Length: 204
Image (cartoon, rainbow, N blue to C red):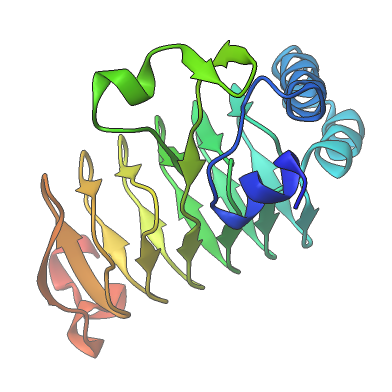
């Protein structure tokens, strides 16, 4: 496997490898260009997302600023909305389904580092000084809502139709169709038909 293939597969890889650096720099430049646009520049934003993301569906809107590490490993479905300051560190694949609603200041982070200082700090690897890291993919099922300030950690899957409360740090998989909150994030209850807005009399 090449170093870049190891990165995508969740194996130890060298982030300073020329191929990885070139891909990351390209993504960072596209993010910078995106973040200089306004809401009204829809065509320009669309073209930048076409270049930045690995794939995306119809009706994708990112308020910006948007920060993506590689971009090529991020796959987004139809009807995606992200508020201010979405950060996606896609060392490994990040798969985001259809009909997603992401609040401001959300981080989806796939990278992982050694727990011991000697593994994190620069050290001799083969014939050069460097570091190795790895990652685990993130998957978000269809029809999810992530509240403001949510952090999703490496390797997490969030089941379809679930709601993650503001400020939650998601360290483990979340099942489908639940409300989950906290740090670390935990399931509070199942979501039911009683949660329909039309049944909330006080809102009408």
